[in-house]
Length: 138
Image 1 (cartoon, rainbow, N blue to C red):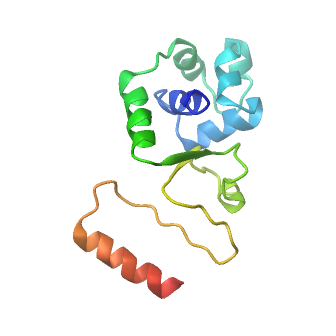
Image 2 (cartoon, rainbow, N blue to C red; image 1 turned 45 degrees about the vertical axis):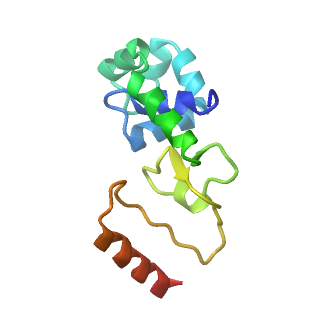
């Protein structure tokens, strides 16, 4: 959990979306190094304003973030981050890839694969429709 916590921590900073997270990750190579960086080093990253650099330096980990991570791991999910070899390489090529993925089961990255992103609280209709669509695709 301690390896994953900095990823959740950085993502919880107000103003940090997937695109900004990727810029910070590309520049510093890890969320840990983002938090260890100086204010001036943060300003060297394209798209990081003084306001956002201040928010990063002053940010405190919200209790809800640690609870969310605990609940996720207790339910049997794994967290795959951009730095993990399992992270889908094609997903890294989009402009704003998610910094981490919640994985339940196995993650196959064969050429003929699809991924489905949806609601955590899907309706029964949504689940059945998704199953039908996905089975038609594969």
